[in-house]
Amino acid sequence: MKQFQSSSELAHWLTARGIDLTQWGRDGAKTLENLWDEYASGEVAFHDDPPLRIVEVVQVLIRRGKHVLLEKEQEFGNAQRRSRNLPPSEKLKRGEHYIEAAVRCLNEELGLARDEIAFIGSAYEKVTRVRESPSYPGLRTQYTFHSIEAVAKGLPNRDFWRENAPFSGGDPVKRHLWAWRPRN
Image 1 (cartoon, rainbow, N blue to C red):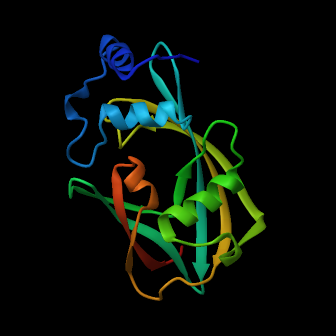
Image 2: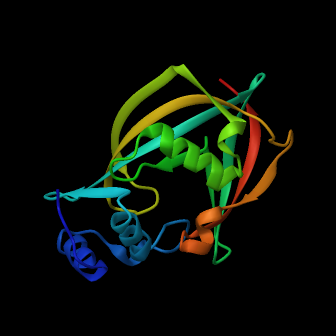
């Protein structure tokens, strides 16, 4: 694993390996400082030559009848928005179990308390994929997805916005638009 002491050291490493940072921070992309925050908090790691961002993510499928809850859109603190169409998802921190990350996700993004969530243990799946990051254009990322199902109490029946709890702590996402959509 590649180690860094500062965001400028990370930026130098990326640009020296051909990653163009000029597209970051616009058109739905995150900034170098966002990537540094992810690294400093233990949410991502890096492999060298060629650069590869390593991320573990938990995705929580919340079903209600024939529908599943999806994050339709994110709004950043600068009012920029990006489409998502993903279930509630959270990056695991170094050493964190995927269930702990799922509880943190549902609390931070949906305002759910632990006693409002029931996980369905038999529905676990783990998949690893490598592709360019939509958040950091030009940076290849290895995603390990831990997919689980859950039942959650207290969610509205219609599309709804929820504030993102970590926004005040520096997370770039201010709020999320959630929608129930027919499941496949």
